[in-house]
Amino acid sequence: MVTSKYSFLMPPILFVLGMSILISIWAIVSPATITELFNMDGASPVELMTLPLFALIIPFAWLFPPTKEGKWQWAWSLDYSLLAFIAICRETDLHKTFGHYIWPHLSNVNFNFKAKFFMNEAVPIEAKLMVFVFYSVAIIAIIAPLVRYGLTLFKEFFRLHPVAWTVAFFGGCGVMSQLADDFEGKLEKFGIVCNDSASALFRVFEEGGEMLLAFFALTALLQAYVYRKQKAQEEQCSSKM
Image (cartoon, rainbow, N blue to C red; front, top):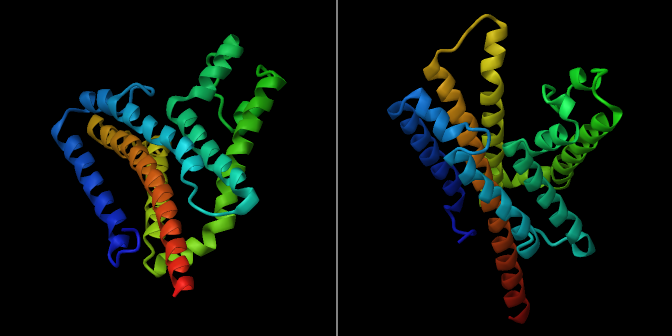
């Protein structure tokens, strides 16, 4: 039950369990095997397990809306669906593949939201516009729920609300994954080169963190829906008494 007294402990327990499994895999198998399991440009077992979790968010956002927003409910369901689609694109580099397909002569160019890309004279204005629109939509889709629910979730976190705790671990997994993705490159800028084992650990944290992120996102969505239904039933019962 979402409203159980100790429900808030579920996210940290699942996080510790997931991280224990990931670190155990890293400790047992070789770095080459880690690459095959975690980082094969969207085709590794871990990446393939992550994609369905993100994909499930799209129908669940419409079938099990986590909040009741009246006539604007469709907008929030669309926002969560967009976030899931953007996550799938990021996981598979689908937007980059599409760009390289449309503009084959840019096969060596990364379609990233960076000044280097927009300042590249070889990149046509249409490609720059596509990247700008894609990342602008992503930023808006991320900011909108933060503005609408961020303060409420922050307060409910200290009240040990299970949904707020799940969202917190969702965000933590996102930060961990992003740091693991960039950290090795940052170290190289300072002349620090990681060995194969350390590189494998970063890949485990990056891809494993994304899988946990997808799991917590889906869990928070369903938790919020169940909690909302429970609260509505309790209010209905109270009004009849």
